[in-house]
Amino acid sequence: MLAQYYLEIRALHITCAVLSITLYAVRGLWLLRASPLQRSLLARVVPHVNDTLLLAAGIALAIVLGQYPGTHAWLTAKLAGLLVHIGLGFIAFRGHVPRRVRVLAFIGSVLAFGYVVAVALTRAPLPLP
Image (tube, rainbow, N blue to C red):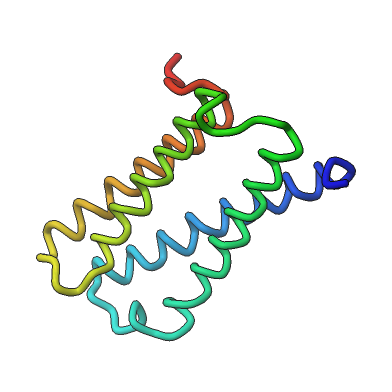
């Protein structure tokens, strides 16, 4: 049933991924500038709604393609990179963590996101040339 919507699900997944890193970069800029906007309701809600759609579309794609973490190395690596991105993002946006640590966590989380994208594009756990 989902297979007939593969292109639409893939487009949603890619769109949400682009929107996710864009929103994340904006929040990171606000973090670096210590902007009060980072605590706004929209900044705290919209990224989570988008990331939920991103995850749902990713799960739907895995089902449609019959490729699952633990079975396919590239998808396992992508999921591991996502968990690193989320963990570092959690540290980056926590107010009680020292600013220097938050900035380093933010940079690390962006690098982890880049790794996830590289794995997705190459379908290789080590997407090196």
